[in-house]
Amino acid sequence: MPFSIVTPTLQEQEKFIWRGYTRADIPDVWKLFQTINRVDDNDYYETKADLENQYDDPLGDPLRDARVIRSLSGRLAAFARILTFSKPSKENVAYLACDIAPEARAQGLEQECLEWMQERATERLAEIAKANEAEEMPRALRVEFPDTAVEWLALYRGRGYQHIRSAFQMQRDLREPIPESALPAEFTLRTYDDDLDESLRLARNAAFRDHWGSQQISRETWRANFTQVSDFNRDATLALMDGERVAAYIICYDNTVDNERRGIRRGYVGNLGTRREYRGRGFASFLLTETMRRFRASGFDYLGLDVDAENLTGALRLYEGLGFKAYKTRVVLEKQVAGSK
Image 1 (tube, rainbow, N blue to C red):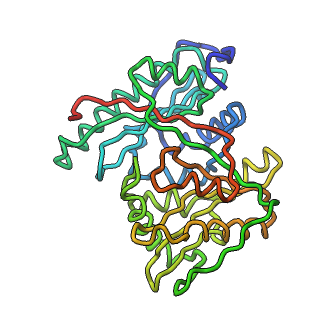
Image 2 (tube, one colour):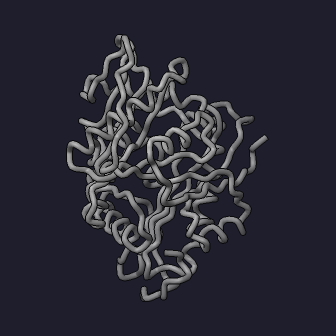
C-alpha cells in the first residue's frame, strides 16, 4: 500500500528514537515485516530464524548499516538498512531497503530514512573503494519497489534516482500439463545434499558472472540467504552434473507463511543458473520441468519465480514457453554517487 494512503495513527508522530540494529530487535522487526507484507500484499516472507541467520551476514554491519526507529513508547515504527559487498567484482553498489509500519507512514519517516540510508551508503561505498584500491569502480545506490508503489517511486525519483531495470514476478499453474523432458546424455541429476552445497555456490558465482547487477557470493552470505533459509526445499533443489562438476542447477523454496495467508500452495524458484560453457543445450528447461513435477507430486498448485525483464540469456522467453505468466512488476531505481567515474 502506498504510504500516503495510510492515515497516521502512531502517537508522538515527530518524536522517534533511532539506533543500531541488535539481536534483541529481531522479534519486533519480524513482526513489522509480517504486518507490512499483509498490508502491501508482498509474496515472500522471512522467518525469525532467517533473521537470526542473516544477522551476521557480511553484507551489512547491523549496528552501523541498519537502524531501528521506535516511538518514545518503544513501538517499532520503521526499519532501514543498507547492504553492500565488501569485495565488489564489477561495481560498488549499496542496496537500500526501508520498511515503515502502516500507522507510521506519511509522517516524514520516508524522507528521513532515505536521507540516512544515502549518507551511510555513500560513506560505506567510499570505505569499500579505499579498502579494495578501487577508486575508479562505479559507485551507485540501488533500490527496488513494486510498480504500484507510486509515492515511493516519486520520492526517490525526486531525489535523483532513475529507472534502470524492471523485473517480473511470474507463476506457473502446475495443474496444467507439464512438458516431458529427458535427462541430457552423459549427465547425471543430483538432489541437494550438504556435500553439494559448496559446489552449488561456486556454480552460481560462475553462472552469474556475466549477469547484470550480479556480485560474487561468499560462503557466509550463501548459507544465510540461500541454503539455510527456513523454507529451503532440499528435494526440489537440483544439480545437473558433468562428472563431479555442476553444469546447471536450480534452488527452490516452499513459501510456507505466504501460502498459509493466501490459502494456496505455491513453491518458488530462488535461483536458476547454467555455466556459460553449457548454455544453449536446454539444461534450464530440463531442470525447471523436473522441479515442476516434484512440486506437483508434493501437492503444490503453483511455482513462482522472478526474472529480470532485460535478461540477455533469454530467460523470460524460456519461462513463458513453459507456461509461466507475469502477475507483478518490480522497478529498480539507481543513483550514481560521488566517486564514480
